[in-house]
Image (tube, rainbow, N blue to C red; front, side, top):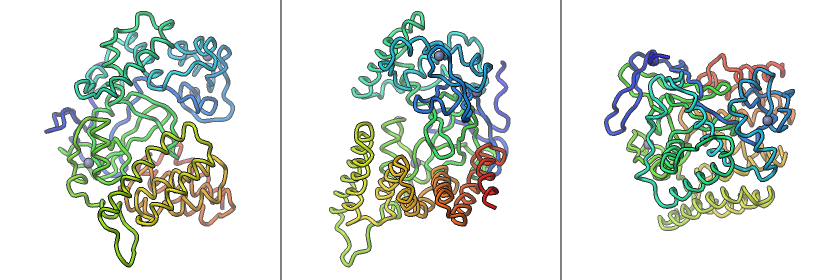
Length: 435
Ligand SMILES: [Zn+2]
Ligand SMILES: [Zn+2]
Ligand SMILES: [Zn+2]
């Protein structure tokens, strides 16, 4: 394939940001800027059986791989298409049984190595940026990151060396894992449930802004980039790499830690939303700055503790953690404070998992309004809460509220996912079924 570029855009050197993507024509809100097939991808283990391993279609009557009984497919074509990648895991999963547990990153890297060996030309996912050009930021990695990188390399050897001849040397693997860590994508569904991991070189070319002018969504295993603001010719096209709920300091910390740059976007310079995001309770005597600071540290600790606790605590223990922290933070923070919202969102997730629909609904109702204020106008986070709420309402026979919430979700999704996306069609069907 020749280097045809992407119509309406060009790769350029963005001052202070390295390579970037800019528009050479106007893009209207909701317009598809480009779509990009995955260079490689992998379905997450938890979604096996619910999605086709090859095309990520979600349906009920998938059939199993006869050998491992783990991978599921739409049909023989999908199974055949997936074999070059699935064969890296099929036999190993049988022989290791429950001990087969490489991380998703390791699984993705095994596929990248295989893909690189059979690929001699520029792939359709690399019209502007080649996988080989990915930055690794190896020089900026601290000891902890280097150690994690070594663990991944050992795991790759352990689970894949029988099926990939001559794995690259340590130095090359260190670089490859580092490249994937700062350029990889996670694929999510319309409710933002994690479906898998993938590499999309052209999508990775876009730099970050906390006030992005495009959103990335997924159609099967392909990424689609749509404008969520008017983009004029000459303007840089910015995607967001992170969850935009949090205040400037937190976002900058996260970007520096994971992507090794200090964000100087308009939102980070004006900090226009920070006050609302850090809102404190209206009390007769307002809390001292010191009290607020110590509550912020508490909140950050709880968030981190909860993230780890998810792997070993029971749902009711997790819910208790949420409730306790909300009670404690609620003495100083308003209900619209992002740290409160973070824990409410976690609580909603646990309630959904426990099928406690009423509690999930009441958390959702508390979250949705402040979410709409804190996030940009078109946000997948906001759309996904409207969707979850709408579906909860309908399940609880609250028709009017359900339809109203789904319509809110739809108005965002028609821009972010595009009017012809199958997720949009599904939501429309759920609405008409109520009539
Ligand atoms: Zn399929
Ligand atoms: Zn198999
Ligand atoms: Zn920023």
